[in-house]
Length: 191
Image (cartoon, rainbow, N blue to C red; front, top):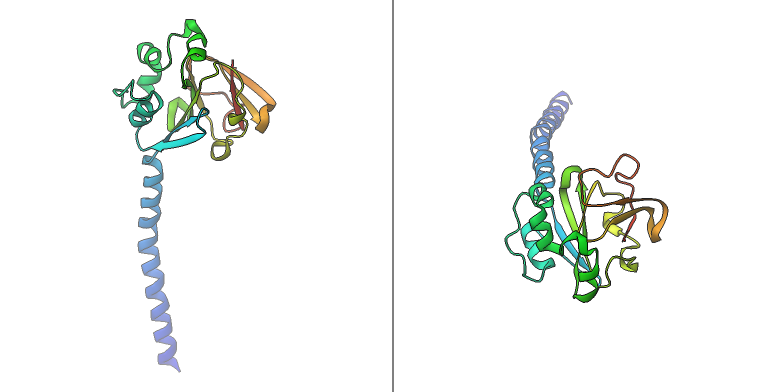
């Protein structure tokens, strides 16, 4: 009886040691993959598509129909570069006039982390700076927005889906939406 208990104890001890040694490595790999892998998506209201890319540059090229293919790799620099932003969606002074005449243009971009970090979603539309029913529910971006960049339009974040609840309007490059709206937005519109 005693040798059987000893074997069981040794077996369980070996399994526990293996689990303790291998589990942190698995957790570390999963965590680092999550931290370094950000998706950059484009939602187009004209054709109802959502396309995602592994780099910001690829998403910008797609969002602009290939018109802008040299987006900076540094998203923070891109958001603050007024010349680049004008290439992306036109001069802010036109405030939507160009959008109404064109096919889909970048209305604004939402980011998962503050200071334009994490993943991003460029929101496209061709009806100018207005409310798009397609953005009445952010689905997998619900309660995830921490920073925004507006093109020619102001970005309005709403606490709840369907443009309900508390709302806040942002203009230009906003590295942090503030404590009241951080990770709270469930819908977005433009003005």
